[in-house]
Length: 290
Image (tube, rainbow, N blue to C red; front, top):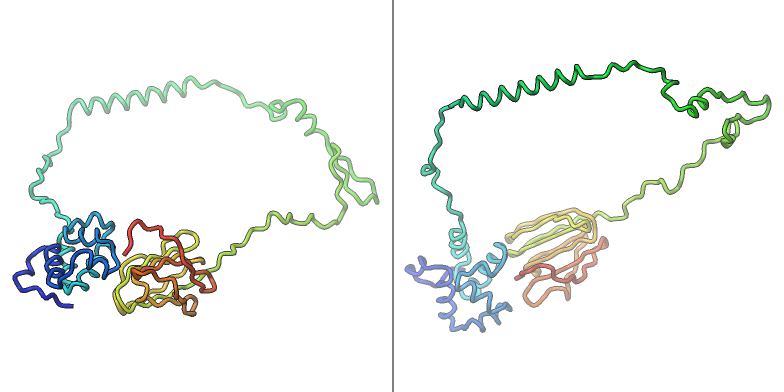
């Protein structure tokens, strides 16, 4: 939508252009807010160019576009002005003083380095000279008496035809040729019951989207233009937030997702989509929305 402002008004700020366009339409801030189903404080912040009150950059862009379209201003022109207003100023690196590039070695630094090396050599020499000359002892002498007696005791041969192998110390007899014990059922590796789902999105108008899976991983986030499409995969159920829900068509695993009764008056939708494609309302968890 093209702006109705004259050529001289193009150089004014965002707030002045929005205010002038609203007044040309004969609207107050409250009337414009009611028309947009928005908080009047949002429109006042836009006209005052107090963008910090609106939260993240994506919310500022969404509010700015909707307000511009409602009062007949050019959303593209105001978006360009907003981008120019938040562009960071880079420092002038030519004014940064440069240090002396010459390499100067200090005599004190060299003396300290030599002292550290000398101390390290002296410490290593003292350690080697002070090592006790211990002779290696036989293994049986190093073992305790009880362990040595156990090591010397050998198991006797099993009686012929007994069918079992004898063991010392009262150990449990194992039947000859028997099958190994069954694996403990508790040691089986559990399998994940979380279903993987693919969500396809098609945009007929600009909309902000945020999607997370059941594990809390962020799958998609951003502002998408009309005519674009996206596809994400994750473990169901999926958490979906839409800024302009009527302009977004959803399909889960090739089946359309119905949003009937889930879209709010301001066009947003907070959804939980299970692995069967059923959508239900979810509580808002964002600090700001549009």
